[in-house]
Length: 431
Image 1 (tube, rainbow, N blue to C red):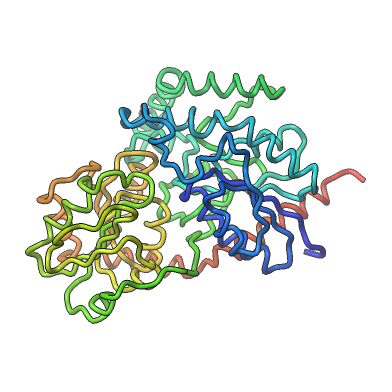
Image 2: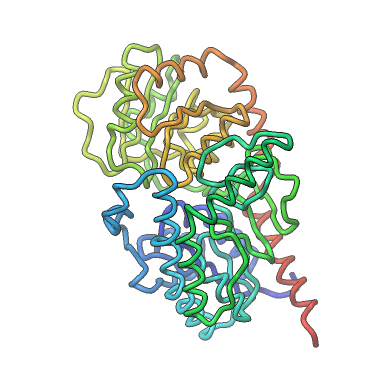
């Protein structure tokens, strides 16, 4: 670019929607651009670490560290598509008016050349539709864009192939839109009317900018889509390469282990009960010839863990991933990017948010096993670990994917594409 750009980043106030934009922000700052970032207060230090200026979002939409289930107690009773529908409506659609107000306030203070946002942040699309700057969406979960070549997002189904599968996919999408998500679409149209926007004929869960969409991950991990729009670009693993986390004192056991190292984590969202995955994994592998490394987040320490287990609240993934033989996770999209970028095969046990879709893609790519439940039995976990350790095909395919990841510098690819779309829009503007 011939001049520094003014970039405004805006993200939904949740870790999985904020963290993937860190390498983009950091690279834009390093390339001399002025970057402001509107985010939840919980992420202020993370934002500032990139060199961007932190702009706090409106308090009415900021959970400020509260869990989603704490904000919406009724959500805990929902499962599957019902929970996904609730999340779209309550967690992502209802905040759009306050998001738009934030963006208007910030662009009035300082005009922006582009607004870069996670795909679930609907305020950016509203601002763009009202004549605002270029919108650049960032896919922080598997692609949800409807297509006859894939099953509707949220079902965790394999896409299938051939005319029969495409007919099935179309029929399921119609059922989802007209029946299951009818209330969600109605809420979106209601918000559009309140904001003075014409009804937008876009699928609610897609969030794909018409200008540029940067998709976290690789084409080989995503379900095949011959009809992928031209503005969609895969950029590799959008993960932060830096870490401020110290290793626990027992980490030398991991580095010196002559046994396969197995890591288990429930991530940062669906981690309310360690009985879902972490504790069953510890029980499953107690007598196995492996070293188990468990991340438990903010939970109380586990009393008397098995002799072959090591437990910590948080672990620096940049140090841990290269040591792993297997990673067991409930399917956070960021975590699986980190694992596959290091060639680590996966076991996925997740049933909420986008996790069934993550699991379906991991299974289709042959780089891991989908347990198809969020609460697997120890027997199923043990069998899956043994399969990954005994069948070299999973690790071979995971390592091949790691080589593919190495071809991408995600932050640089994203920054260059942002510069290009801003420049192309500027050239296209009438003089």
